[in-house]
Length: 305
Length: 305
Image (cartoon, rainbow over all chains, first blue to last red; front, top):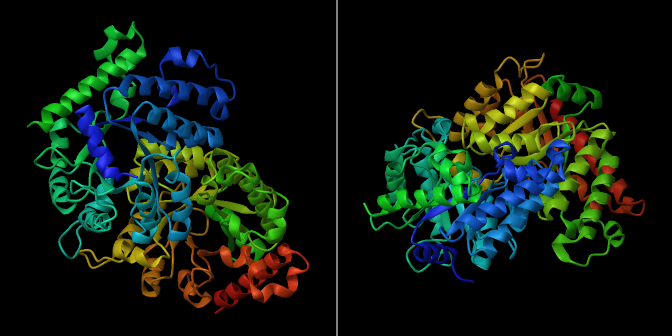
């Protein structure tokens, strides 16, 4: 069981990019050609809807797997379809893995220890679960420890929320403590401590415990990059959520390491983007491929700044 | 669509208790007689395991439905069984509802708005979803707003985490801000603001937006009871998690309103408690019933203090 941070850093070197493609499938936004094969009848519980989403996910994976090291799949968009949706999420995790991608389950789980242990078994443990998941730190260490235990035992990883990409997060995360630091910086310090367990540390100074850090607040991101020195950042918000490559640069260390950058809607819905209209005749996957290449090129300029 | 707070307060009056029974089913702790009917073969994905958990859940519901107004089911213990487990969770929500219980899905979801909207559809919207769910406030208002929208449209409720029952939560929730208040108090203030939307307010001064508040820190709970005046508290940690009825008293207003108190393991695993050993011969459900009656009696002494 190789350390997750080592596996991720190796995959970034192999693909020569820290780009992560996010799969957030919303039925109404899928290419018409995909939906046409699976006529809808019964609304949100329909097997057809789930089949269309799986077909779409498989197509995205096929298009991007040669280009990027890692894919993030957000389970929220699958849970809307009940047990069938959850099984489809897990199916796509397997498809992505077999296509050579590392996989992050964007599940944002967190509970008291007793319940987090159940989540850790359900969401992270075992060969058919993702390589890593996102977790929520609001309950402190014992809400996260069961996930960390699985990381240690199975070479898996977690990314704890620290500074998220949405504007209203600042009402919680940017509030200043007596010490002068923000809540996000305080939580970041805790996460960096959790990450320091020697059984979690890989060979390059990075831990299997990473952090979700958005450059929503650039100064905050700079500070967090220093505080969370052991943590690989999962950087959300690129593209559709409005974070430019220039802002994202604040999440890397000086040597260009220490972050993966996620783009979801900007890549997977490229068929609906005028920029790729000429390619649409060759199929929606060509649009996804081109958008993914552009995303990788954008990040490349930033990393070699 | 009657307001959720009104529905909950009415149910509390009808059953004459604010007791909530929590269903956190762990296979290894189920009564042997239940498991014997569903022999296990394939480990965690086994249909037999899920069938045993559903049979247990049905038995618990049958025993406690005449005694309490509301049941909380923690989805963590079902997700460990994949899609089949998730469907079983939803099945038990339906069983509890048909038995006359209000239902709280303990799912602790929270994401950015786009993704929380998907969770809101999957976890809270619709007649087969619970009456209320728990949510995580770390992402601020736009992580919670999609759930609030469903509350408004469908007469549902949410309980936002504020002060949780686990000890290590204090490393995040009890830290003091520049203003002198704790993170939990600050988050509590936000939640009380969110709760104030007039379309969420019921007739007795309570909102469909409630809060998870543990008396882990009694002084903190007293403060939160003042700050969160519009919110019904979902109080975890009674029994197995070590919060006594006396501590729980700090979560009620002076008139005895404003809180429901959850006990999970102390009630549902009563068959393994020596205190109920004499009843075991009459079946494990008799033990659950007796433990639930004792729980209700304990709370009754507190409420009428």
